[in-house]
Structures are given as structure tokens and as C-alpha cells.
Image (tube, rainbow, N blue to C red):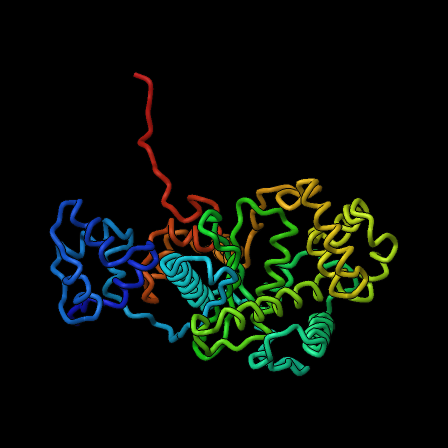
Length: 398
């Protein structure tokens, strides 16, 4: 029998997933109590020293990962690329690393499910139209760049066969074209949404993760459009944290422009908004049709030169006085994503002779031992979908 080798890489992933520094983990383990130092943990993570059995049990207890997880090798080949955080400048590195690991685990779960379920192929790898290289643009919202982004959004609508007018469901649209969607509920940590992609067995698979729990549906829809903009327009091979603040803001502006152009296509939206472009209450009617926030529609109208800068500022001041910056008419928060394509895949397996134990076992066989509760959370499954049900012994009356 081949001897098991402790994986320091997996220890680090589990620590980062739990938003812990080396010092945090050492402190938590010492409270068990089990004596350990930050220096020892560093040696374990870089593979210089293997921890004792008792220490590994402490990792299991504190980090909430199964024992076997720390000794496995993935049966699939994969590599993650950059992660686009909209709030890169304001979110702590610890939080960003934790959410990056969460996305990474989600994509690993997908890698296993992909062996059992036929997912839609990614329809972005060979776009039938040219995407402009926006990575080296000067720091300005030049009209030519805006025109190029408008063109890409229009061409994507044609390629994905999106009917004219409002998009009914952004989530199902991107999922049907091969992009995964997941959610987090930690909205207090300053994360709006982020996107990450991973090369899995030679094929690219992007993931959009959305912060839900307080946002209305129209904001979530725009977040998906924004992240889709990053996925299509921007390179994934660079270190985003090395970008200057000005370059980072420009990337965000480009993704925002793309989302507006996709959700509010120029020709159809102009016809609607020109009826009463300066009447703030009229935008409530437009919101019912387009399912986009009033603020986003005003910004779009300004971009399309329907509203001049002076009137745009006046409308935004009026909007603020009405309290609509925090909560607009027709907002119904919190919004929770309906079934994601990954949750539907697991439910499909459960309806086709696979038990919950089979699915958890399939993860383990492929080198991904995770507790059922974690799989449920990462795949947006209802609680106890995969958790073994407690069985009580039958009772009888004496």
C-alpha cells in the first residue's frame, strides 16, 4: 500500500478558505488545546515537515475539512487564473483570498460533476466577432472605446440569439452559454461580485460569484452583466493587484458600459426613454419593463447623450432626496438566486439513482473529500440535500 503524504498546499487552501492567517490558525489550534506555532504551520504548508497525527486532527476540527482531504491529489488537471474583484481597492486581501479559494473549490466540484452530467459548452472560446484589446487603452472613456464595447454587446446578443428588448433571466442566459454562477451571502464584507475562470482538463470554465442577501433582483442582474463584461473584454493572465488605480477604474468602467449596453440595448432603450427622459417617475415604469435599476438607466441615458450632464446631476440629486439610492421603487430585497446549474446537476443525479452518499463519494474518489454541508453551500443547494438524515429507532406502546 502506498504511504499517504500530507499536502501542505491543501492545508494552505483550507486556511485561506477560512479567512485565517498563520497566526490566526495557530491561535485557534492552541485553544483546543494543542500547542503549535506559526513557524511550524509555515513548515507544514511548504512541505518541509509533516505534521503529527494529533496535529492533523486539530486541523480537521478547526478548519472543518475531512481528514482525507489533507492527503489527496486531484484526479483532474486544473489551474486557476486571475480573479476580478469589483471592490479590489476596498476589500481586504484576507477576504479576497478566502473568496478566491471558495470559487476554486466550486470549480473543482464542477470538475467532478462534469464527469457525470452534460453541462452546456462554453460559447465564448471562439467568438465569431472581434473583441477589442482594451488592456492598453489610455485612461479615458474615449468614444471609440465606447463604440467598440457597444458593438461587442450587440454582437453577443446576436450570437447568443437574445431577442430584442429586456433579458428575462441573466443567470439562465450565462449558464446556458457555459458560464457558472454561484453566490455568497457575506454582503457586510464589501464584496459586490467577482469572476474567476479555471482551465479544467484543457477547457476554460468561468464562474461568476454574486453577493446576495440585501440586493434587489435588478442589481443582481446588472452584477452578472458587469462580470460578463470582464470575462469577455479583459485578459485573465495578468496580476490585477499590479494595475494602477486609474487602470483598474478604467476596467471597471468598461465592464459597466458593457453591462448597460447588453441589458439596455441602444435602439430599443432610446425609443422607450425618449418619451419622458427627464421625468424621474417615468423611470419606474421603465424599470418594470427592463428590470434594471433607475440609477443604471439614468447612467445609460447619460452615456447615450439623451440627458446632458447638468440634467443628469439634477436627476441624481432628486433621486437621492427621495431616498432611492438606498432603496428604489419596486425593489424587493433580499434576492436569492434560484437553482443554479450546479444545484440542478446534483438534483438531476439524485433523481437518477444516485444517492447523496454516492455524490459525496464521487467527490472523494476524484480527490475532493469535502463535508456534505460544504458542497451544499458552494453549489447553492438547500440545507440537508446531501447531509445524511438522522434516523430514530421505531417506538411502540407497551
